[in-house]
Length: 248
Image 1 (cartoon, rainbow, N blue to C red):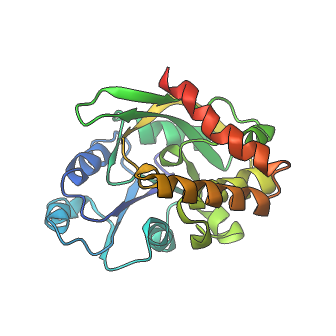
Image 2 (image 1 turned 180 degrees about the vertical axis):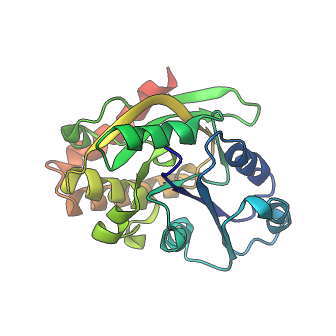
């Protein structure tokens, strides 16, 4: 299992209040074959100073202006040399120390190119406000608004080489579009890890304002249309409806 290398990418920008918890959750993993890549967008607060405190645990670090979070992720992917790639955002952290060893075991034992799991949204005090339980992968569920949580999504590096990186034309839906491209259009096999892998703090970019929510719906619809979803307007309604059950 340790022969498998995981390239883990963290994208940051002015994240001085959260980056330490994120990085410590990576360093604390009981899986050691990690290529840790940090792509910073040119932070002006104390983020870079904090990152430098962990430099012995970082394989690649870049700090420069970018075109947004997915452009930064693409920079990280281009640096990656591991067989498997995953993302852990600066506001997120691993739920426990066994996450990456569980991911590595799944890739080693299952004949799949993608694995994913579950995620909890939490308040600043740690209280859980929403539980995203993905369930087993069934391709047709994409037609009903299903998708796995992106911070739990790990895939073979060669998929990016074969099918492309995150497309910036889809805005905040770039991760959704990439999953549609990999899983729905190209029918790549995936394995579900029934485990909370990541804790995500509430307040993501796509949900900060009504305007962003409208833009998010537009980008979702664009991704659906361009990736052969059968009834995109039905799927566009079903996708946010799926989130309601995660609050109970």
